[in-house]
Image (cartoon, rainbow, N blue to C red; front, top):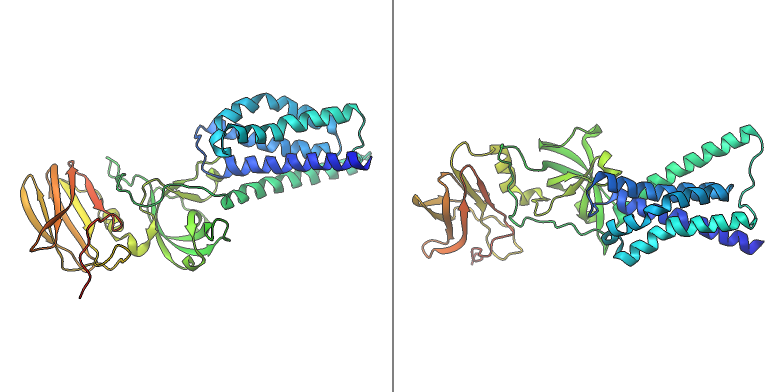
Length: 368
């Protein structure tokens, strides 16, 4: 009798924990599958075993019926979300562990008259109280699962790789762009890094809804020292099934998310807008080694293109800015009097080409 109760409690706990894992991975993180229907089905598949495990405490037969009715979608979920659980084998173990195994277990134990974990309440008032208590516990477990997703490791490509324009062809920001101050950094959960932080929005450039108190949750990699730091964020709304309804912002691939002092070029482009005519080449020159972010003011930059050569001098922030350029091939050179090429670009009409400060392969030599 005791052994039967222990095994039943372990199976119920397994259904709850694995169901919460599915909710956390599929409902709270950025998953590889973007189809809303598929994501919502997977989240439902995580909620079902949690609910069924709570019901199994008093009514194993009903729990078996719930799990086994949903279990036919297990192969579909396994193939669709295999990459999110470490491969097909991992997905099989998770989805069969939340639906198929508990379903057959509760069916078998109910037919062999195993003892119920909790005795059913016979009075109507007691049954109503238990139903409300179970519903409340279910909601708490789902919320905890969604929140725990912020502690799961994820590897989005972060940093400016120069691959995405900052504006669309219509002249509006291509992503959600804003500046914010970090007010809270989450606990460290991945190699000494926190995977989320709470920030207060300071300036919007487009696409960001107005949430209460201007507080948002940023996903990324943060250190405790980042508290009170100001960031420029180029991101997007979370695409997960649950967090898409919350103020959660994720960095975009090849984006410009960085500390505010490292986003001077992007901020100037956003404040100026798309060129009314011609193209624009703008970038920042740094002095010293690659790890240094010291801007180099007063440096001559030669830009050669279809209309000839022109020389621009970097301002106090180390930025050069040339506008009204016709479409064509352009070469950027630094270091007068010994000019040496740095980048070569093809610039379409009414386009902006930015040079991220972290992408310069050549920098000025350190001061003597």
